[in-house]
Image 1 (cartoon, helix red, strand yellow):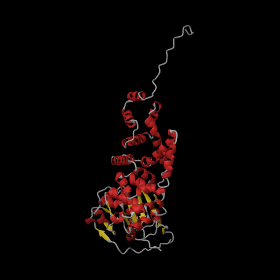
Image 2 (tube, rainbow, N blue to C red):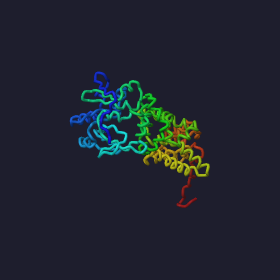
Image 3 (tube, one colour):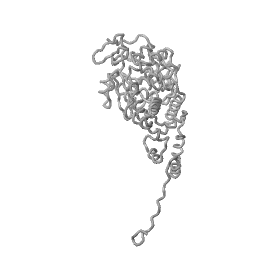
Image 4 (cartoon, rainbow, N blue to C red):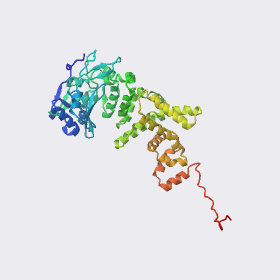
Length: 442
């Protein structure tokens, strides 16, 4: 049976509008509409999570989450453009214009030996991992079910107050990321919390609370119990948000990179060039995000999986396999081996393989393939990948600079560059045919 009584500890602190800097003006119209509609329907509704935390740090929030005492079914019935998602943790996505607001029901605190109770359940697996967390409770219980103290701050638009049960405001001011409750138990409940700890600490430039950090390295193996498909989404959040270089080094420090990419990790440790290759790629990605340019998952994974693909390719070449089939087999094998840890959707694996398999063609630069390569939809990504390889110390016949110059050249200059390629055949002039005299050859 799951308890619905409120935790006896906690600050139970309400900070009035005059004593904090958060303003309703930071809310999107969609978030405000959801909060007001729930409130008018008689439910309690508050802003929670990053939409509260980030503005208090001077950061513009990217999305807004709402917590309420309405059940998922009640929320869904209230909003026509909504859908209930999730089995392990039911939430409701409410569409308002182009924006999606995530609405969750207050969760209850579990007892030591939880059992399913009716439709709403809290269940633990044999390893202590939460299988289902849909036992609903009060706002105070909900605060203690959240992961970090800085994510358990609530903003009430009825009186514009902040509600803090866990000391999150103090941790926010001290720039400390602290787990709510016993960190080891919370990591066992959901191992993904270890990834989130690293991601948030990197994003916010926070210090990890010592007790929060201590269990991570020895328990990184718990990620093996998480769905590889779910880990794909978490890896994207780690490395595509504009602070992936710092995140990468923290995942190495705390053993998470090894748990997510075991083969790449073992190869990287023994190669300075691979370390440089990945670091430079992640620095470039952070720069692109800062400039407002997109970073796609396919390119990220092409970089992270290249160590094992390159190793397999070299092994096949040494075994006498022709270069092109060897690279194709190596690409398939590297991606297949990774799927057991982080599952990469097929729409991305095809792009990854194309980027890799274009590498020898970019290096060889055969005359009749130059313009088709330039028009290939994956050319730019493959070219960027080639530059990274050269920057990390690989000798690739100066192909990167050649392609850089070729893209900057005009049509006449491009034709001259192609004609100057080693082995390029010069155009042969056809012999002139003599004019016919009286209809007969001379």
